[in-house]
Length: 428
Image (cartoon, rainbow, N blue to C red; front, side, top):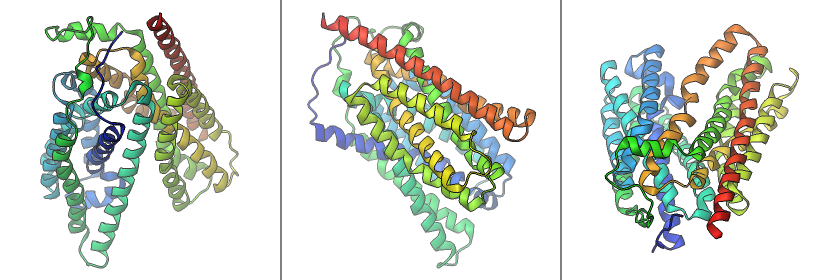
């Protein structure tokens, strides 16, 4: 079994470092996904079409997928704090270029750079740093706080950004492009401030100094490391848990159109319901993390996947006359459960028994599988709604995702059994 030397960090110091990770994670992505709150303003200010904007984000998604594996390999060979600090600085500098509102060709370069900053040099480093920072019995709460806290930071920054935009377009009398620049400066400033803080507050985790006679030696090749990781059944179970949990979360992106089309709600009512759902993220993720640590991570994840699947399936069973109150209730339940799943599913990495020397590579493989819905779910939804117009298409779409959620619960149960057997052998 893997033996780690005791950390010199106190509990307070580790939680301070976790807070830094939360703030970092909440700062990297909002500028990249500025379209969530300012899409029409971006189109107007940059003089681009919706199709061109879609092309940039499609490229970004592809870059994420192709960098998951290299990102893990890099996180095993370069300090996570250095990688995250670089990501913040690089993304921030690209943001300064973005604020000049350059041509479409330049925007392609900027988005490609953001794909590298947020994918290649950031993602696996963030997950590995969190895993190594938490003690084995704290994995659930640390990942829960990371995801919930990240959502809270993003929500607060978005609120401040909208307030700044409203002020400059209202009281200050500036036009939309100038006001948008102020919003971009806000996000850029936060990233550039956090870059050095990330480097100096997050020193090398002492758990990298593992004492394991069977650990992978530095001279092993990438292929050999991949073979070790890919041969572990637990890695694929963890990947299935994340894949099915992420699909349940992805389904919530379609709630707005579904409710507006089939429940006769106004755009304002739908926006209010979906916005209320966002506040379930810090509540659900943090609660699931703590409960998972006190009970059993895989058991809690399995139960959450089952209830999230049932709640999603129940959404399409509501009659057409269901009012906004009933829809708000079920959407909040689904939001709480799906965010709870997201908050805890990465903590199952602790049960995969992977050496710290190749843990980044394991994160890369799991991410490649777990986040593949980014590619195929939009295509699947479009196909189903075209082949089965109306509510029937959404029923098949939501129902199919709910069914796969039950498969994830089975995978979580299998991972629990494997981890339990390993623990019993280790105590003999």
